Length: 384
Ligand code: FES
Image (cartoon, rainbow, N blue to C red):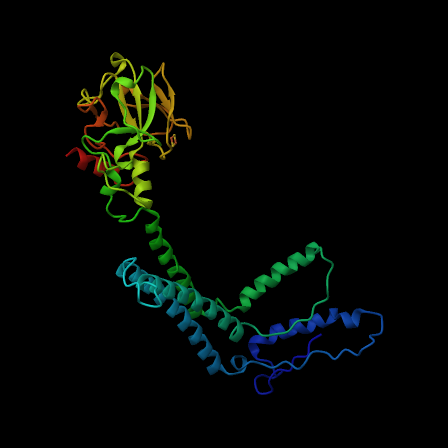
């Protein structure tokens, strides 16, 4: 049942022309009024629906136009906020100006405000659009059993399609286009923020190409940090090791590392050392003096996507990565003999110091770990 009374001064039948169809639809819904279809007498008389009040935007074209401009202005302001987010991202350094607002940095405040305002304005714009401009008519519907029959579902789809039509998205290109623009511009902050998935100083890719290893740094056992005498290693041994700089002491004089920096250096500097018959080794060109009595050292980080490897088969000198089964031949410059890895494990040039401990001749001469963008360029730089 419906009780709509259209404004008297707007059309022959008193209904704004735009809503004439919906009023007809509403009237037809009276045929399924539960109060009419029931055969029991109602103990309390049905008071019916209150008289419908048309909104100013339904009857005043100027009010309608004004509301349309307001919605478009909100979507436009949302676009501006998205652009300001990007500007703020590149203008303020993280950690600068911590006292800007209540101990929050300028970067935090501006990024939060601009992105928050963009989302808020889009939300308010959509609500305003729905409240002021979308169709305004009342419906009465019978209660249904929980499971909807197929015809009801078809009717729902038809109603949704009708709702789309009634939203006026086709008739109001200004709102449609500004809303599409506002939502599209929201992609800008998302894309720009992806930059932060990389390590700090992301554009300084050289940082990824170097590790903490340096000439003369001792190789020490992983976890315990004890140096390794070359004479201690037995044929077929594999030792998981690390740079001595990660175990600073008064004796070795390396500075303490903390937090992220320590974790990053630990990950990049991890190595495996194996000892094999020197006659089994096929040194790559220029690497003839990188081993010590059959002791050879490689990065422990798989060149596929960076898992740590250490499953060693001493008879074949193959080492297997447990993640995707890439297999490297340690006797032959750690070339890939199986699996998805695309390049050999980087080799660390070895020597012994005056006390007989294993030391590095230098840093790795190529980037360690998984491949990343611009790798070829940096490998070339390292070789130059
Ligand atoms: S990470 Fe080693 S094979 Fe994939």
